[in-house]
Amino acid sequence: MVLQNYAFRGNFELKTLLILSAIKADHLRVMGYINRLDNFDGQAVGKAAVKAHLYEEAFASFKKFNLNVEAVNVLLDNLQNIDRAMEFAFRVEEDSVWSQVAKAKLRKGLVSDAIDLFIRANDGTHYLEVIKVAEDANKYHDLVKYLLMVRKKTKKPKVDSELIYAYAKIGQLGEIEKFLLMPNVSNLPNVGDRLYDEALYEAAKIIFAFIPDWAKLAVTLTKLQQFQDAVDAARKANSLKTWKDVCFACIDAGESSLAQICGLNVIVQVTLFLGYIYIYFFSTVILSPCLEFSIY
Image (cartoon, rainbow, N blue to C red; front, side):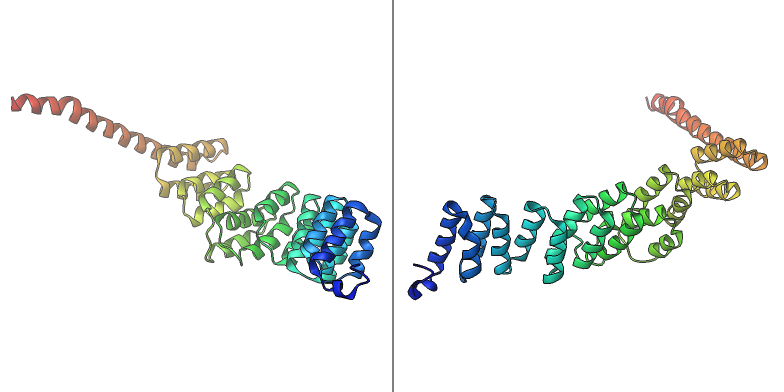
């Protein structure tokens, strides 16, 4: 009646009901109805077709009404055909569709392809997942490209910090130095500690010098066998622990003259420390009781 009677051809509800009924009772007619009819609820029909495992019919319904994200998700999630999804994405050229394909690529571990598609989609919303998967796969060159895109869209400490780390992993120390001179929201102390812990000492040196954190810079310089610079940094830090750390490093390396300088400063620091203890002891244990006694 709906197909043959002109009075019913424009009836949105009846045409939708016809297809939904066919999905439940007559699967073979569903695709024909979707192709022949217009002006029905493509969203409802597509969802019902997915539930009935009529995935080609669902794809056809979604595509007919330009519900392209839903359509590509049928290809990716139900038909599991990423090649068809790519072809469809090229055809519709929508950022949201490219994003769905990118996520599917990422789930499959195709990190480089996924990142290229996220960049094509101009989609930086999934940066946490991308960072984790890219680092697990050691895809730091690709990660740098992605993070440079993301930081144009959002200012997040995680993004800027991971960009510095990625630069360090691929040995682009010059890019780190340039980046530090630009406005950024990276967590430099955390990045520096991470680089040091992973023995990326040249990159850690740049970070600690920029902050500056003289104590950590001094220890980092000893790892790089740059002992004179380490002593200079220890002098600026001027703490007992730093002098001791640099002193022992110099002794281990046979740098006796530098070790002597550090040792003398250790003595000075210890002497000062003992002096403070003596002052505290004198003022609290001896002087205070005497004052109290004199008052009484």
